Amino acid sequence: MTIKIDKQIVDYSVSKNDEAARNGAGKPEERIANNVVQMHERLERPDMLVGSTYKLKTPFSDHSLYVTVNDIILNAGTEHELRRPFEIFINSKNMDHFQWIVALTRIMSAVFRKGGDVTFLVEELHSVFDPRGGYFKKGGKFMPSLVAEIGDVLENHLRMIGLLKDDGPDQHQRKLIAEKRAEYESSLRNFEKAAPNEFPDGAMLCKKCLTKAVVQMDNCLTCLSCGESKCG
Image (cartoon, rainbow, N blue to C red; front, side, top):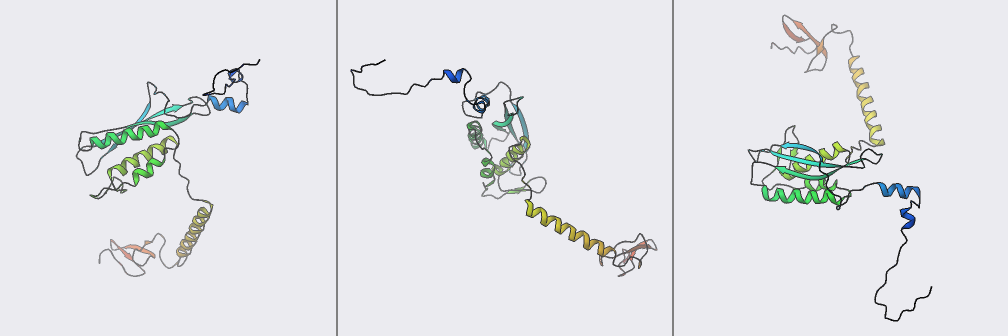
């Protein structure tokens, strides 16, 4: 059918026939992919989210901070099921950091909801240093700032839900570790066989001469090799 155009064309658009797609036509893998829900900023928040709360205690404040990360479960019950962080909150009785903490958590939550790879946040937070100096958290790990410890919490959470994984040593490193272990075990066996019959069975290792020659003599531990004695 021919249509005559009497007016000047100022705009145009291409009409697409979506009837085939609505009827299920197309490649099977395309239809499967269309059914998989990906993380994006237009995804509506469910009424209930799965959350984890972490307690932070720093030497800069008498009050603890409580970091809560809520996760959304995408494609629940299917082979494409995925747990992704959706929002983060930080609460504390200490109001000194209230302003920047609210700003930080809102920006992080926006990044979570944007989708894509959010693991880069861990490195970004770890690189923040406090001009007053850092501190050692429980367990001896050094934290350059409070923000860095928040990044440490996020890293632990992402590892828990499977977004971050430990790669471990590569093939070359595993081979080197195995060689060093075999070398150490061999040297240890040679050391134990160096003088098997010189001292009594059951003698303990001397911390001074590293010989299995420490025995109980007159209620005192004494080394038969170098003479080291607990009683002087």
